[in-house]
Length: 236
Image (cartoon, rainbow, N blue to C red; front, side, top):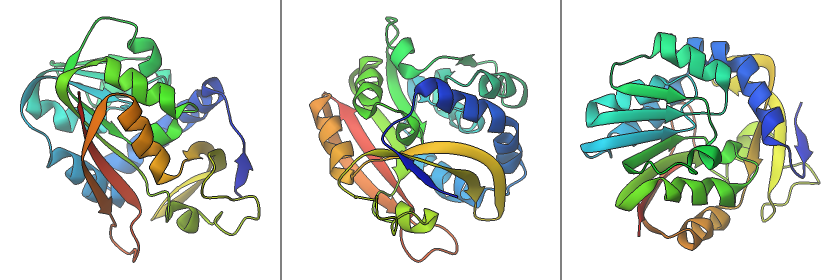
């Protein structure tokens, strides 16, 4: 069942991801999550240049962080879900990776800056998109790339079944609560993502001193319409 809300606190969202962290790790490791392994990960990894330092914003259990480690000498994965970070330290460890249980908004208060940032489906889990994008910019050096994926705002509501909800208005932002599901498996664990119109993502990037270099729609096996978007932006 889907429920639409005006907003939701980060602390409540973090508790949801703590609860589902082990399930998500198993889904990716076993290959059940086709989109993660064969759509989202390749889309991000195939665009990465080799750099000295890389940060994975909203790294979850670190499955993508570990795969991206080959592109950098210093790698940091940050996520506010302590349970996800604990799993990452065990199942996706690498001597070059440091996992930190913090939201990017908190982490950005430090002086560390990176040559490259990646983020998979994390911007849509943040209650405050402007804060998330601004904080991401703060931890990047000038000319650094920010490569991230989001649910496709135009088609995700169709796939999740709330496009027909009378409360749904594409032009407005709101929290979407529902049982987490992947193409091959449903769960009874509730998670929350945020719907934002595409122009809000793009305008927020521009307002946060990013130059948008590329916007790519991603479809995936068994789907006729795009499900995700990859955005490549450069810090200016």
